[in-house]
Length: 260
Image (cartoon, rainbow, N blue to C red):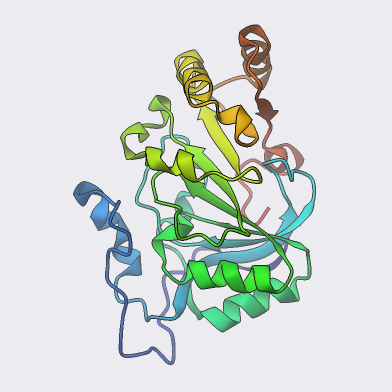
């Protein structure tokens, strides 16, 4: 089970020593106008702070690092609303912490592997120095991010796990396709498959973009929507050079459990 600092149902709190300057409501230009109201939890957040939903340690449940002990830093807010999202509580719930405190709490938990996740973590500008400082401390840093934010400014030492949104997610129009050209061999691409049409669409992208030649590619079954055994069969039938991904944390613990 996880250990660390995390929230139950706490509302956003004010930082006791808030700086007078604040970051803009829209920290990334790629957020479309009709999604901007979803960034309201970040409005007025003091510069140099992060709105944090939870910090905890557990076993990594996804990616090629699955099964390894990992510290998770989950940030608040997301501009997308994927129909399979399993962390809607991170859309608005969080506490404001200074960057130094977030780094200290992540390092105190002690694991070599640290994942920055959300929500969508790249919505907060302070996430970039956070990742750099963790990498400077010798940590292997993973970034779990949608394919809907430009990853150009991410520290090259960070291993990006890029979640390309499928049509079944309801957010396919949000994909920033230029991100594919930025992928490094140590990065990973993830497709969450909601049905056979999603699988065929994702397979066509993998082949057209030669993604498997660039980095590992993961196909994950949308929990409760696709049987992983069926997805395994589709992968074999299509002879796709991709990895079937199971969400280990949902197998080990209650699928609705937080902090795991």
